Amino acid sequence: MKAILRVALGLIAAIGGFVDIGDLVFNTQAGALFGYELLWAVPIGVVGIAVYAEMSGRVAAVTKRPVFDVIRMRMGLSTGLIVLVASLFVNLLTVAAEIGGVAILLQLFFDAPFMLFALVGALGLIVIIWITPFEGIERLFGYLGLILFVFVAAALHEHPDWHAVGGGFVPNGKSSTLYWYFAVGLIAAALMPYEVYFYSSGAVEEGWKPSDLLVNRLNAVIGYGIGGLLSIGLMMASAQLFEPAGVEPDHLGTVPLLAQLPYGETGLVLALLGMLFAIGGAAVDASFAAAYSIAQFAGWEWGKYRRASGAPRFTLAWLLFFALGLAVLMTGIDPLDLTEYSVVLSVVALPLTYVPVLLIARDRTFMGEYANGPVARVLGWVYLVVLCVVAVAAIPLLLATNAGGG
Amino acid sequence: MDERFDLAYRLLDEQIVDVDGRRCGRVDDVELIGAAGEPLRLSGLLTGRGAYAARLPRRLRALGRKLFGDDVRGATVQHVPWSQVDEMGATVRLLGRAIDLGLGREDRGLQRPFGRIPGG
Image (tube, rainbow over all chains, first blue to last red; front, side, top):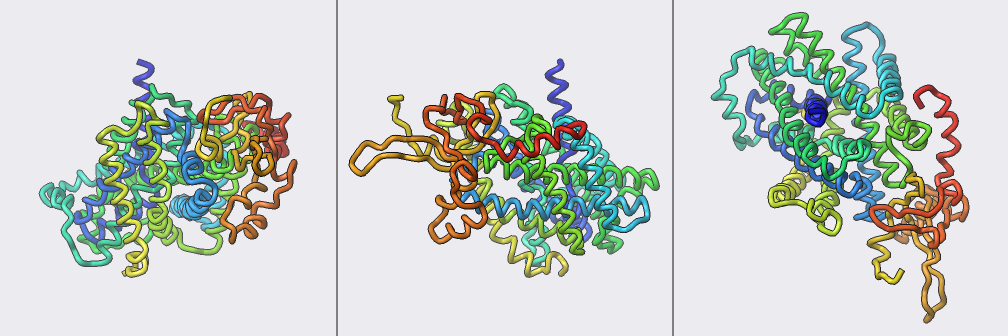
């Protein structure tokens, strides 16, 4: 019974931890611009993150090796270093974007300068991380992120035309570059790699063993699957409320209106809180992901379970990423632009970290009986192709559409 | 050990763990000793950022030395005698403690200040 409860609690956290600023931005913008027409891109991204997370969680549970451990071992020092630098760069943009998102949301509650709230938000998150154990961090932000289901309720409240919704799950071969830019952005936003570095390192933090593989599979399939519903809800609500009105959500503060229109003040506050915890949690995950990457690459002691004094350089690394994120924001770059760049550049770097995980997950010398079965094998290779196509298409589309600016 | 093993595949780049299970570096290089035509002996593991530059492509080594530091034994690179290696599996486990082998030094300076903060 206790075991079932533990599984359920972890699963709920996985659902709530799925959405970050990238999903919020791309899903609402896609809905506002193209209605239901881009819904098909969401499941492609969600299945992709589930495949990648399942493999990396399984590798971590069986071999005790999280993603950057695998990268260093399989790619060696020189190639591994290139992958590390590329990952840290996009990770930094992500940390900055998420802190910026937190600051924008705080500004909607209180009236004060943006940079002050960025600083307050970052310090608040640092204090929460410092005093909370690993599982507590994961659950706190995961559970409170579930408030985002208010957007799913808003989508259903408007009595969607289910026939049109169903049609959105079939790509319609439009020739507009903006349409394809958003398709790539939606897939990329669901597939943010920092989530996987965090997830696989978390498996080691929590001491997963092969007996935890069922939990891993449930987290990947059900946790991310239901998490994907949040994205679909956002896009549907935006398609119903923003598209007909011609609203272009080019400010993060526009997004909560999706809940305010049907539910008034309560909806607005719920939406803001849900977004605050989802984005704040993502800032934590992304800065930890960066610290995990460096520590695992260099062989330093790491992990929240070691406490700050037990893993000092790891601790210094995540603190540094909060500081660097703030420094990026101080340049005055718009957090929404940062979000788009971080999402699109992430997907360009993604195959670099996906390939070593795929190679070790299928390797019987490391994985024994837990190596990729037929389903994981087929999906693993199919997604390698999908990722490469998306990665190659991402930059030209970013430039051609001026980052979605048209 | 009579067993044959692949130095690059099984040893190089692996995580080093001390007798207490503390992570204390990676096998950034290995040191072989011996003259031409004579049997080579694996004298030990090298770990630390000072060992990075030598493993980069030739053209990038100067840059590597600038970024990660020169190879200074006892400072940027630690030599762990092969006789100290207890086991090779998912990690390379040592017989001694990191502190006695000069490993994880950079962590030590920060340990106390972090430990002083409540919750650290």
